[in-house]
Length: 201
Image 1 (cartoon, rainbow, N blue to C red):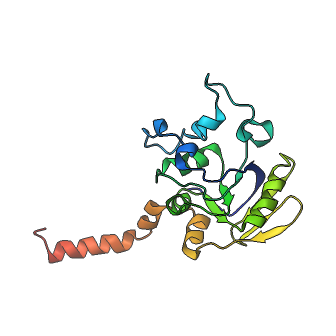
Image 2 (image 1 turned 180 degrees about the horizontal axis):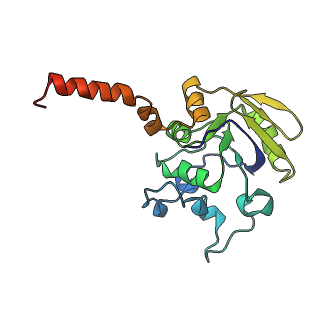
Image 3 (image 1 turned 90 degrees about the horizontal axis):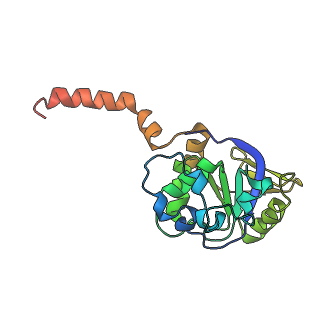
């Protein structure tokens, strides 16, 4: 998993509440178990017209936001089913941070496990960040995980809270598998001892 320390990039505004995981990645794209390749189908039903062409009115199709690294959204982001493909699609598109007033719990935790930083901020602060994001590609937002701050293009700074363990995992790029591998010496020691004590197992 990629480490997350600090990013400075374009933030895309998506001022919708209750964006559920089916809106993020519709069910027809859940057949894959690969974490790559889903970015093209992120927000598929809003992003494409019935004939398959891009919807020019959707924010991520606009030239200013095609390489957005931050997404500023409305309340209750990631609600609905628990599909892990949702953060996979977000990450594969190139978005590393989602900022919203609140998140669905399962989606929130899945973000950390997939190298995405979800930041919950009060509505009035999200409103400021949303307006900043609407300025387009010349307005670059900075998200600093170590300092736990979000800085607008105008230099306004907001602090955010993050669980210490989740922060450590993002800073070090540790997913569940990597965390387990850190315990390899202890696991091998246990297995060797268990084999001696219970050779019949």
